Image (cartoon, rainbow, N blue to C red):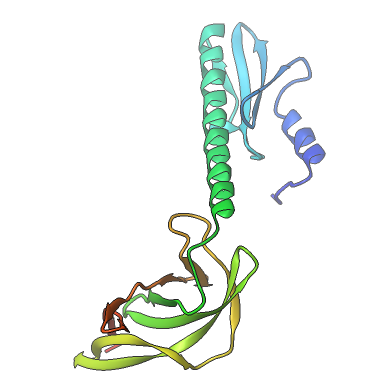
Length: 210
């Protein structure tokens, strides 16, 4: 079954799940709807949550009383309202974060630590601010010291660029001091300790495949 994205087509597809005599109910506080009808003394219902093509909980339901059916529909609508409330909250937080701006500045060093059977450490440096929500960054070299078999420590080498500039959107949540480097890795800001006017970064550990 292909995914239906057109609202009118989705509505027509859902309508087939209930007989023509069914009464349509729609949640006012979230994205959910249901149809109700009676059949041979049973109180029937089918509901849908969000943009789902399939009925909520997988099928039609048959209840022995109207009260039980109403309780089932009420629970469905409560779920929809909760989802909508969470979505609204995230949108509000996102808008507030965007209004405050992000925490990155030109010259900031970012670190990305990623890997499955090994720990890879990459460093980047912010080279420009692009609008209010994006930055330009470049990869930088690392000073590395081996401390064991295919393992060791490294620190960033600010200003020692080793790749072209790229752009990325700053994370919209939390401290807003990180960017997405790839689908599998983020890079977060490092805060150095100042020693005699020199920025000193804490070493990060790395490992390699055996």
